[in-house]
Length: 346
Image 1 (cartoon, rainbow, N blue to C red):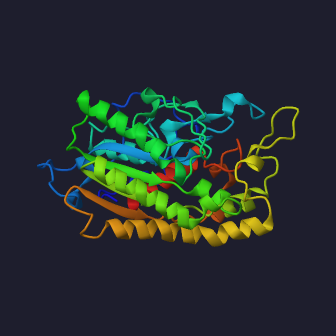
Image 2: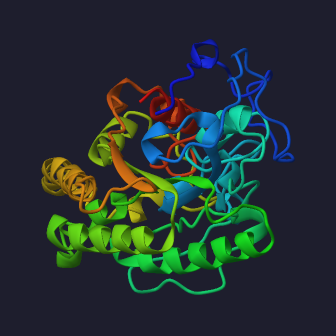
Image 3: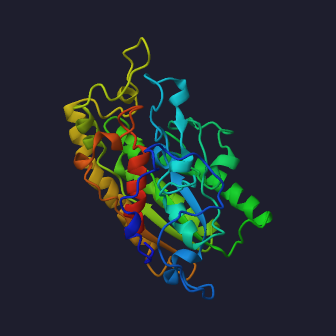
């Protein structure tokens, strides 16, 4: 994505004792042995951006962008209501917790004024189809992370409503300027894929319409922006791989209830897993087509462009610790750090 390389931290642990670092102030960039960049005048074209030109990060997405379950079960034997947390500060694309490897924290090394990354934890948000209650956002934690757990493409306007309001407030308070360069990470579609075996509105056709409408709204309302659209993972492989670890996902105390049995309706039969596997490339092709559409000279200009970033990971090569032990479905803090490095290098 940005050319300063970060090879020295490619295998950096989360912390010295292996635990997830706690949230901290946004004023402490990662201590990484990389050279700083020679200051220059602000670029006038989005195609000329460097890491130190980005002044704000913005996130649109679902529970992965929100960091749901990334902390896992650390000091308890069972899943409990206390584990239903979004570790927004660990989010691969939007996290700003001190000491963790995320895209914002890597950018922060080069751009000390970086604004928008989310910090800390909060109770899981709920956004299921048309049911996206207002009032769930906590701006002091979320900042410019508009992701909602459970969100599908039909919920993109709900997230944009929040983000546009927060941007207007940030401009008013001089946290950032309208003409500051912004990196917006767009990661949606996993929940559409999880519903596509049974819900027609979650098929690639309606999905592409929702995504295109959202990108158009961004283009018309958020100037000086580089959008990176992130491709979907092979969700079916997560379910297949975690079957080999039946005790890793811990049930509720005195209950056989396992959370991941209820998170992805299309993942619990061989036939539906096959459907998900066949549809995943179609969803990514839909995302790529929207990106190609908006990269044309008719839409891209000096202050707006869009790129597609495939999240090229081999899930079958993951150690089980890369998956949260809350539900054997969501990525752990370890996987979030890997995802951030993949985006950075591409």
